Figure 1 (cartoon, rainbow, N blue to C red):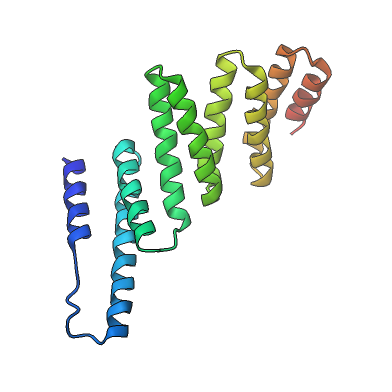
Figure 2: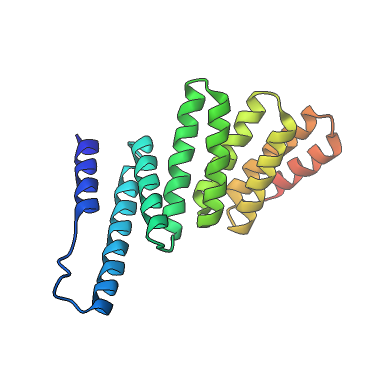
Length: 194
C-alpha cells in the first residue's frame, strides 16, 4: 500500500505545475528552476523514505530523479548518491541471498562507487564488509583482504576502534590462510593492543 501511495505522489509531483502566464520572462525562468528543484528534492525524499523497506522501488525513484535532474541540468547532491548507494547495497544483499552472485557483486561495487561520491562512510563500511565477507566465504582470500583493508582504513579515518579491531582480526586470520604468518601475527597483535 505504501509503495502504491508513493508512486501516486511521484506522478503528482511530475505533473505538478505553477501558473506562469502572468510572470515576466526572467521570473518565469526563475520559477521553472525553482519548480524543478522542488520536484527533484521531492523525488529524492520519496526514494530516501523507500530505501529500507522497498530498495527496488527506492532505486527506481532514484533513477527517475536522476533522469529528471539530468534533463533539467540540476546539480546533484550527496543525498542522491547516498540513496543510490544504500539501495544498491540492499539489492546486492538480496541477490546474494537469492544465489545470484554475479549481480550481487555488481550491485555491491556500484554501491561503493556511489557511497564514495556521497562521502557516506556508513554505506561504504557496510558494503566493504559485505564484499569482504562474500570473498572470504568463497575462499577468495586476496580479494577479501583488500576489502578488509579498506574497512580498517575507513575505521581509522573515523576513529572507530571497534571497526578497526574487527578488520585487523579478520586480516590476521586471512593472512594465515594465505601463509603470510608474520603479517598475520602483526595484524592480530595490533588488534589485541587496541
